[in-house]
Amino acid sequence: MNSSDAVYDLDTAGLPKHVAIIMDGNGRWAKSRLLNRIKGHERGADTVRMVVRTSREIGIGVLTLYAFSSENWQRPPSEVAALMRLLKRFLKSEEAEMCDNNIRFNAIGDIARMPADVRQILQHIIRLTADNDGLLLNLALSYGARDEITAMVRALAAKAASGELEAADISAELIADHLYTRKMPDPDVLIRTSGEMRVSNFLLWQIAYTEIFVTQTLWPDFSREEYLSILRDFQKRDRRFGRVEL
Ligand code: FPP
Image (tube, rainbow, N blue to C red; front, side, top):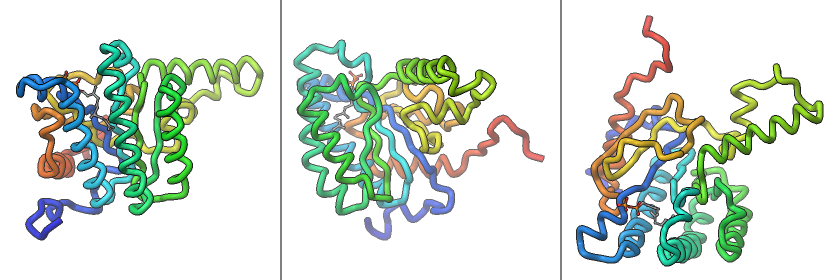
């Protein structure tokens, strides 16, 4: 960071507590350069490093990255295998940085579906960083919001059936407490790169009042400057949560 860096224009008191990102456009980035899609994912992994570093540096509480959706299993096996290899490489290379920088690592999604070797590294880093209390880096892996909501309904229904819970006890707080994001604030900001105007089954319950930013930039080209500029724009937005100013 240097003194000309846009980070100095940020109001540190009004930073989002939770930033969520749909990282899209790796394939198109590669295609436009006549490269294999995997090259796009490799460059995308560098952007992941940048947003994690920047988020930690400026004091974001939680960063949730949509790294692999439950639908992504339907991609060609060679692409799925390459994404798993990249993820492993990323986790191994960032392990020390997470420890040194007080980052707590977490994974949300149907982690049981991940390959055993990836699961092992995930569990290792989750355990290793469990006592850190700086940035919480939350990777969404094999994640789908409808699956998450279905699991929550099943858990509450089981508790109701066993008599542990009355139907009237079910509240928005109790529902939030049975999602993967339990104990985390809802995202204040959702960023989607590459211009698509959809939420693609990401954090459907949690984004009820989230400010959404869609940029045309493809994920491998997403820069620190653009990230900081979105955070500055967020600070100018008037969030009313359905109320009116009196
Ligand atoms: C979207 O690009 C991105 C993904 C499917 C996954 C995101 C993966 C990374 C950023 C790389 C590795 C991640 C980590 C955490 C190291 P796309 O393939 O859908 O792009 P397209 O829509 O242009 O085809």
